[in-house]
Structures are given as C-alpha cells and as structure tokens.
Length: 248
Length: 336
Image (cartoon, rainbow over all chains, first blue to last red):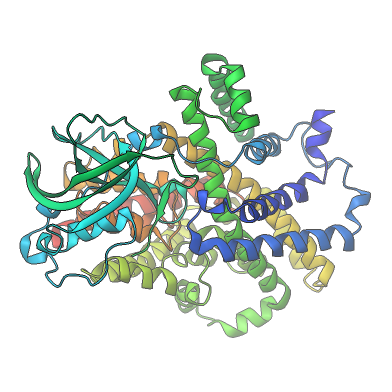
C-alpha cells in the first residue's frame, strides 16, 4: 500500500507544487526572510507562482488526474529516493518556520571588529557620513575605518550574548552579536561587538539585550579594539527575525 | 545499490536521533506548537538541520524553476540544426563559445543542470555540456560583478576566478572525453531519454513542453532535496570552523577552503561575500580556490549531476576540479 502510494504519479507534481506552495506561504506570512536574503523575495515569489501555474496547467491540460493515483510501473516496489523526499518534504512542510538555534552560533567563528589586524595605512581615514544601519555593518565599519572616526560616538545596538568558543571575550567584556545572512541561512555567520560589562551585571549567553553606550578604543589582550562603553543595558525579547542581512 | 545505501544512511540517521535523543513530548511540542525550549542540544541540532535544509530548498528551488524553464525553451525552440548553425563547427571553437554562454544566462549552478541536460538532448557532446555546466556559474555577468565588488581591494581575484574556471572546465571536459568510454558517460535513464527525444524531435507542442517541464522539475527537485539534506547534515554535524581550523599552512588552508566549498554548497552569485569573511584567516589564493571550485563541484551539485552523468564521470570531474583548484590556490598564495 505504502509502496504503491510512493510510486503514484501524483507524487511527481505534488512535491514541486508543494515546495512552490511552501514558498508562497512563507511569503504570505512574511517568514520567507527566516530562510533567505530579502533581495530574493520577489524572484522567489515569481518563480513559485510560475511553477504552480505550469504544474496546474499540466494537470488540467494533460488530464493527469486520470492517472494520478496509478503507480508508475517502471519504478521499484518501494522507490527509496521518492520515499526519502516525501518524508523530508512532510517534515519541512509541517514544521513551523524556525530560526537557527544558539547551537549553530557556538560552532562558528565570530566576526569581531578587528582594526588591530589591519595595518594602519589600509584603514580608511575619510570618515563615513552616515552611521551603519546594522550590527554587521558596525563590525565592518569599525574594522575598515580609522577608529578616530568613532571615538566617543553614541551607539545603540540590539543582539544576543554570544558564546565565542574559539575566541572568548576578555575579562570585563562580553560579545553582543547577531547572525548575518548573505544568501540563505546556510551561510549565516555571527557578527559581534565587545561590550564592557557594567558593574553588577552578568550576561546570560543567548539572551537578547539592548545596549546604549559610546564607542571607545582600548587595548585588549588580542590587540587594540573598539568596544562599547555601556551607559544603559536592558533585557529584550528575542525578535521574531533575529538575522541581519548582507548589505554592503 | 546507491538507493539502498542512501536509504540505509537515512534510517541510521533518523533512527539514532529518535531512539537515543528524542523526548517524544518535546518533539511533539516543537512540531505542533513551535516550542523548541525543551529540546536538548542534539534535538536542537536536528531543528537546525531542518532549518538549514529548508533554507537551501527555498533558496535554490526558484533557480531550478528558471533553469528548467530555460531548458524547456531550448528544447522547444532550438532544434539541433538551428543550434549547430549558430555555434561554430570546429569543436574547440564551439567549446570556447559554450564556456562563455553563461554570460547570457545568469542562472545559479542548480539552474544550469537542466540547461546542460537540454544541450545533451539537442545532440551536443558530453564534453560540450560539461564545459557549459562547469564554466557558466562563474563565467557570468552577475558572478563577475559581485566578485569584483566583494574583492574591490584586489580585482585580480575576479580575473583569476574567471580564467581558472575556463581552463579547469575545459580540462575536465577533455579528460572525460579521453578517459571514459562514450557509452559509459550518461546514466541509462538519461541515455534512453536522449535516444527517445532524438527520434521525436518534431514533437514540440505545448503539451509536450509542459510534460517536459513537469518531469524535469520533479527530477531536479528530488535531487535538490537529497543534496540539501546532505549539505545541511554536513554543516550541522561537521561545523565549518572545524574545517577551517586545519588551515595552518598554505597547502592545508587551500585544502580547508576547498572542503568548505564542497560542504557549504553556496550559490556562485553570492559566494564572494561569504568568502570575504575568511580574508583575515586565509590566504587570498585559498579564497580564490574556494570561489573556483565551489560553483563547479559541491554536495548539492554532485546530487544534481547524478541525474545525468554516471558515477565515474562525476568522480573524474570532481577529482579534476579539486586537484586543479588546489594547484591554482597554492600557486596564487605564493604569487600574491
């Protein structure tokens, strides 16, 4: 019975149509950016609609419903690839949209402002006119521009306390970071800023915080780095979409 | 045999999860209510696995639809005679033109597989379709512009990427022609499809095109699921930074970046931004090797290539791309 179902011809158009439907559903619920960069939204929507239209036209025009439940005789009793695909499809279709867990962050190198690793002559000395719009851009700007551009500058950032397994935060600091997506979640990488720990405050790894403070350059054991001198720190709810997206 | 191996791996993978780590109530809560708070680290790994897999599928599927659409148009409107009229008769010149044809089709590598299949159906040789398949993802306008933008501090990265891709794609195609018997290049199913199409070239009606679209879309989607599952599993259970941690010497760092390219399965149009994150840790040569090899051979692409080529062709292409990218990466590391 199960083998007969897996060999049925409708599987061949229900799965591609289902994937297109999943994309449309994610788009309609504004969840598609949990998986891909927003720049692909319109392209993905267009292609999903096109796929659905063509598969539907195929179904009607070729009168495929007549044979939809009949098994494909050329296939083995239980076609393994089809069965795996159907199981995987059912799982991803029924699972609620989700984001990467903290576990994924712990297994990746955290990108930090690294002006100490860039020779002074390579730093850009013409300061940018506007402040960066995301935490990832702050990390990029603080690595690329002369730290003098940002000395004493006010900053407000939101992110989660990152556990950087390969380069733990120096004593008196913790890392506040976000995951940055370039293309889709498979390339998500953590970007973080070193935050000076306020007195009587202990961060909880993976909890979200909003930090107000000023930027200052200090000498850390790993080299000279820009850090955030905290004026105010508060716990916040984790956002529904925790990612930053590549924007340079 | 391959199917049974895959099924075995699949069962071991999910069986281990279910019997060793799963707390049935928490899993049910996660699936039904989206509440992942009670999950253990191993269970979170499986949540990440499905999140990553969904990400790859949602990202790649639209490109597959576009690629299959282009493939159907090629098969419908480009008869073998018409294509051969447009392209040079000389084999080398024809391969040269095909190497650059990605400039007209800025489709990601997953979308190029159905196009390469349509070239074979239209009577092009296996070597010619391999040149197109390997070169087009990197030798196209979008990828070149993005690479130039990402590595604007060293424009030669983009130049090296394009030149090395063209050379490696052509060498791989020549080696396949020299070392593998013509009858052993294509899978039996695909060979039968080519034979059937060549007999019925005149049947290019709308319904025939729809049928072609549906069957190609299902074939590639099926393999996309398998490729996405393997890519997500390898990233969930073999962290990328374990791979990069071995990059202590020039040789090892190039090897590490090549393995990373293989595992990460990222699109050619954005891999430059991803690679940029490794500029401080790896040589530019190793990063260029990543950009060269990734779009040609990765986990997802191997799954897709198996829709058309035999294991020995895919193995020879993979080995050639790996070795030549390694040599290129090491040489560039010393030169730059």
